[in-house]
Image 1: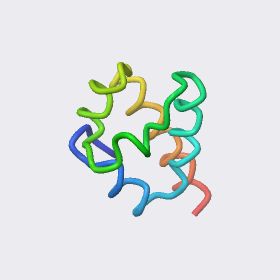
Image 2: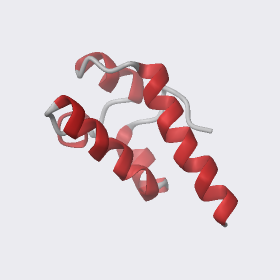
Image 3: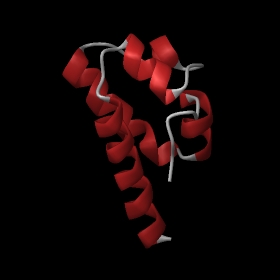
Length: 71
């Protein structure tokens, strides 16, 4: 389970399967979150990009949980 204190860089390096979550948010908010906030924590990225942190964490953790079931 991922928390708000992990940086986006660390997250996508450890769990590249989360990249589509950011791509989906990019399309919703017309900004590249990974480009603009790669070195930020999820919490800071959410603040900078006006995102709902709880929804972002839920979406990321859902992907990780699904991926763990496949492994």
